[in-house]
Length: 599
Image (cartoon, rainbow, N blue to C red; front, top):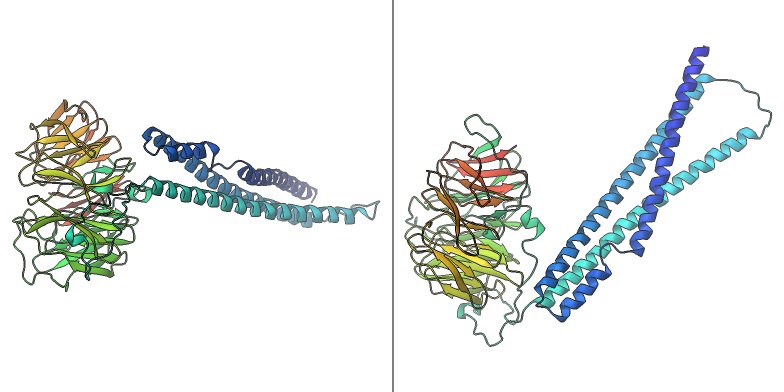
């Protein structure tokens, strides 16, 4: 019996120690969280005097690019401060709740051991038990009150920080608007831009929106279009695998059959992957689960006014479903060889659909879609009239349409942020041209190509790189008066598009040879022959290039001055599509299947 009492007393002492430690820990957290609230109100981690001073200086000299970059760096630090404070507040709140739970458990365990002891002690002062009970009561009430007050201050800190960050976002929006350039009021707009009919939306042509945040964080965390954000061949992803094997199934997460054929590439947003398929009689859009590969829904694209009643003639190289879809996370947009364009919500319901004119070309339509500022950009260079259009993402109506004096092209548009404005850049014989996404106004153009153009352009550090087989590779310094920095005709492509950084330009030929250039001078660093042809375009992921050949082998090599192979994993199924990258995974359309590759 004595041993049992001693054991119970030992347990009670243990839980008392735990309670004291948890109490001190929780009290310290309360002080820190309350102190954090007063610190945020005293010294705003987001809206600093330094940034405000720099913004005032920029308002006096909007053309100071160095100052603009300095503001962006401070803005990045402010955002990091915001998210760090939010994490600290949330984590501190969770730790406080944990400490309170430990205290409650300790008290309950101490009470249970006391009931077992049943020891009788003589109390000389009859008031002592009452005093002890009152002390415990007030300590408990005080502790609970302190915890409640702390949680209130934590909520206020989180809310206050969010308000200040929202105010900062609002001020940045005003800055961007002030930074927008006014278009020349004497510009004669395109005739078909100003038509007021059921397929045309009104547009304010007095101003241009030349600079908004692009690409946004949401766009960069997904893979929303052909060749990634803006169509420029760059994936802003991490932890992408470099090893897999289709034969053994190593790192193959899932494989799903695609109902109808097509040469378009996967597009990824959130937990969804999108593709299209079509034949001479049927057109469909597919949505796959990113995690399981299950087809979540299939949308039938039919019954659209103006769509051809009989199947068009297309070649086997292009087919009826070559263009890649695009998405903004709210809707997905698809176009087919028939000229049918459709917008679907993320559940597969039709939002709008229209026919923009039956394409007239001998291969079939293959130019992919892009989105910018709620505008769906369509490059439509056909034999019966070339043009670039912006359709309303909400209604499908034409916002603007700009005629182009070019020959037929199968290239896709590229959208770039030059630092001073956002431009749509297109290539077709005989020139590369840039357009304002707000109005469709031609910003600049330069003659530099010929032939039937398939590859899209690449952009980096103020230079556009354009090429076509049996023509030449041209590096163009962009601006209102563009100029060709250098030219080369050693390695040219008729299908794969190039990709560039501020240090390197990578050109892939359709017969499987890769060349790396200095983008400023045109000096060749190296060339390497993989021995197998490719139609897929290279994608830059971090410091590596991923290039898929026709036989299903992914050639992975470093973006560097010297050729350095990382690996050549084999999928084992023929493909001509460009892969998509998202959430540490690669999505590849090969044969009649969609593959997901992950570690």
